[in-house]
Amino acid sequence: MPGPANTLVIEGPFEELAEELAQYIDKVKTPNAEDGQGVHAVVMPLLERNQKDEALKRLVTASAVLNSAPEKEFIAAYNLLIHLIRQSPNLNMFLPRVCQNLSNSPINSPSANGPGMALSTLSTIFNLLQPDNDVRYHVFLAILSVVKRSGLYEVLRPQLKNVDRWIAEWESDEDEQRKLFLEVADVATEAGEEEEAYNYLLRALRTLPANESSSDESRTLALRALKSALLHPTHFDFQDLTSLDSIQALHRSDGTWFELLEILNAGQLEDYENFRQENKTWFDEQEKAEDVPLDHAVLHRKIQLLTLASLASSTPSRSLSYSSIATALQIPSEEVEVWVIDVIRAGLVEGKLSQLNQQFLIHRATYRVFGERQWREVASRLDTWREALRGVLGVVKREREAMEGGSGGDGRSMGHGGMGMGRGGRGMGREMAEMGLD
Image 1 (cartoon, rainbow, N blue to C red):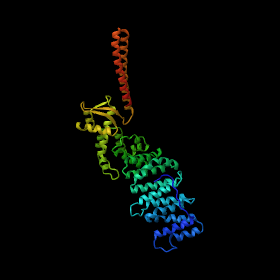
Image 2: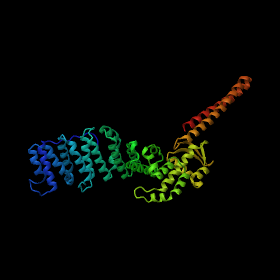
Image 3: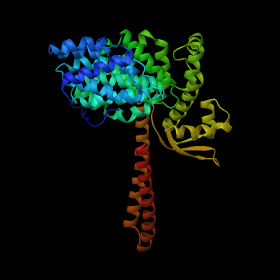
Image 4: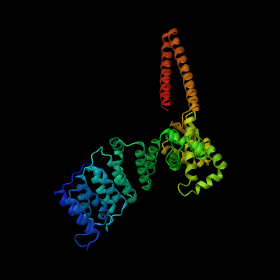
């Protein structure tokens, strides 16, 4: 895989090395061929006329046969070819063909090391090129192709942190970025890394200009990202999707999918159940889809957890009774604690259960969306806190007046009471701070 820059140490004049490689290619292709035939016969006259690039062109064209070389000779043969290409002023013309051979053609290795040898050779090519050489882009696509075919995702994973830097160095345009992001998404999907695949799919979507949000390509990518987000069992935040023009365009082209997204984004379990009943035929068709079948069990569980999160964030008392949770989630009362534990594990809510009082005490809850309704809830809480503060200040004022107008003993008594109320006031301040953090 890509890493520190490499140096190939191969000695000898270009002509001698090219002749050696031509003879080796002929040997691998036709072991019993007579001298003077094959690639060697074509290359030698070109070398005699000092037509190095023409000779190199013939070698590169025939180089696919190196994939059939013995395992112990494979790396050395490809290193020799790479060394010859590096001596050409047109190396950017030859390297893509070599990458194609390594990524698309099977490697003949009895020990199943073929993908590893291909990745090693491609990494050598990648690291020998200057960081800003955009041929690195094509080499990396070839690496992704090998990783996808071989399932060696763990080899790729450490390199993904460099993708942004590489794109900047290559000055890749939006189309090139989108192609690369989609390739990474495909590789991650094949490896079962759904969250990583979704992130790169989202990045690919963001490369689409706003004026192409209704194109066929945009619609295809948007639907793929939407389905991935909806059906991923631990993905609960859909704001990253709903903010994209390409997703908003689905409101016109694929209204049912868009409505389902809106329900998972801001709706409740009841909304989902009503939607499913109203679109029963569509649901049945999507559950039988070959590419990405809809999974009611995943959606139902997800909307139940999100409904509980919404309840927790909207309740002014900072607590929920078991009975209200059971009603909202349409579950038996004895299952409430299990669902509360699940919603806490999902990171949607923080709190603790009070089995004695049959209450869920909420410490923190995050709004799923923040719009006009949520602003009204914040305003209502602020009004409540303001009235509470006025009450505290009124009590403090009365106690202070009583201290100033009363006797010494009474003053001490009232002073003590005033200090007690002061502690209460400070306690209220702490409570407000905690509520404010929510």
